[in-house]
Image (tube, rainbow, N blue to C red; front, side, top):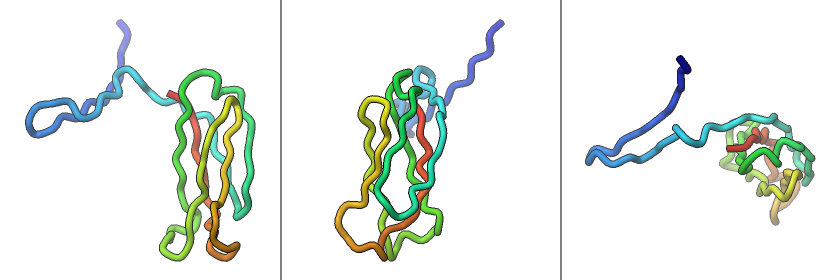
Length: 98
């Protein structure tokens, strides 16, 4: 017998709000951005639909901002749009695929 783990969250009215029974995530890795624009290549992006999560390394984003993240092909890129060097926040980007 195969055991399957799923997550389903229901609204108070009984309708389905979140259903992760069909789209479980596969974590591929993480990268620390520092305060400069950059990119990484990972062949795992070809295995599904990319997803990512940006986390601040300082814990306080009230005086700074995180980079914009995008994926094209096998390349994950991040860029700090506008602002000044001093307002950039080093972040951890966790990435994977659905």
